[in-house]
Image (cartoon, rainbow over all chains, first blue to last red; front, side, top):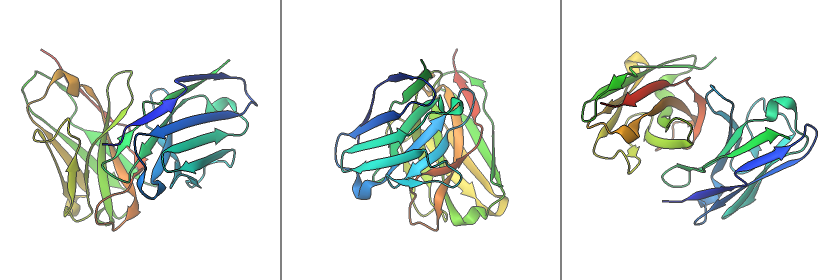
Length: 107
Length: 123
C-alpha cells in the first residue's frame, strides 16, 4: 500500500496569500496518478486536480498541481475566502489511498 | 447534473450487518466505475471499495476485505455496499462516488460524490 504524507498539517494564511501544500508518497506513484480534493465542513469532497496537474472542470486557475514520482504539490496562488478548507491528496495508480489532509485556515 | 444519493445508514451493534444503497442519476450509470469512500468522525478520507462498470473488477481496502461486499445493478442505476461483522471502527460517513473516466477495466478516481450516509457501530 502506498502511504501518502501531507504537510503541513495546518497552514495559517491570510486571504490573498499563496498556499503550497505538499503530498509525499512512500513509493513512486504510477503514471503520476495523483488527485487533489477540497472538503469544507459538512460537505462532500470536491475534485480539484487529477493526473498531478490537470484541473477539473470549473476549478479556478488559481489552483494548480505539480510534481511527479513521490513528491507532489498543490498551489493556490492567491487565497480567496472560499478556499479555506481541508485538502486531501489521493493516489490511484495502485489500490487507492488518501493522505491525512492539510487544513488551510484563516490567520 | 450528476446526482448520487446514499441511504441505509443507521446505528447498529457490533457484529451486525447493514446494507448501504446509492441511487444514481444524471449520467449513464452503466458506463462508469463506482466507489465507496468513508470518513470517520473528525478524521480523513479512506477508500473502501471500487467496482468497474460491468462488475468485472472489484477491489477492497484491507480493513474491510472479507467483511464488505460491493455490488451494482445497472438496470436500477444503483450501487450497494453489504457490510457484515461490523466493528466500532467502521463508524463513519460513507460516500458513494462516480469514477471520473468511463469504460475503464478497473477504476481511476472519484469525480462526483454524494452527500454521504452515517453508519454508527456501537452497543
